[in-house]
Every structure is written in C-alpha cells, then in structure tokens.
Length: 129
Image (tube, rainbow, N blue to C red; front, side, top):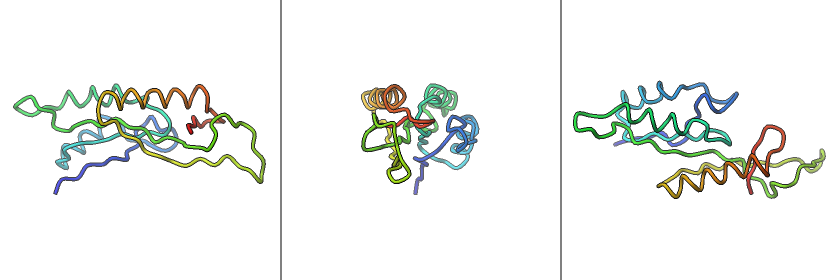
C-alpha cells in the first residue's frame, strides 16, 4: 500500500517545523512515497522551492519520483477583522489544512494566504474566516 504525508511542516513554519525541503524529498524517495504535501502554518513561503525540488528528482523515464502537493495550514477564525480580545473572549483560531488539487486550487491558496496577512493578521497569526 502506498502512503504519502499530507501534513508536513518545513523550516518555513517558524517554531514548528525544522525539516528542509531537500531532506523531505530524500526521505519520501527512500520510503517510496508517490506524493508529498507541505502545509506550513499560515504561509506558502516554501511553495516554489518545494515544487522546484521535485523536478530535480526524476526516474529514468523523466517522470517525477514524488508528486509535489502544495498546501497550507490556515488559522481559521469567526471574524478575521476582529483585533480586540479580552480574557473572557479570546482569539479562537482553528487549524484547517487546504491542499491544491490543480492550478486553480493553488491560486485560491495564494489568495487566502494573502488575505490572512493583509486583513487578518493578529499578533503573529495570519487568520482567515
């Protein structure tokens, strides 16, 4: 049975991930994974490097050894515009992983990530609703 990790944090998930993209691919290839996803917290800073690294690892037929799946673990809140909280009413953030199925999915992830940083940033958390 094939297995692929779909919830992976890279060095771009500050204080949460330490894995380099190169080492993730080495491990995925060694374990025979057909695909690998990254889902860094609130950002897609590693997406370009992640996909570019996949194209460095092809089989003898020129096919990618590991299919890259770009994703993001979003901080979801009821109202991204709310910036004032109290002890009784805290900033409640749920975590939701979204993965791009195709180019349109990737574009949607980029829009959501931008929205989180532009309109939903509270402290260090880019939030969406």
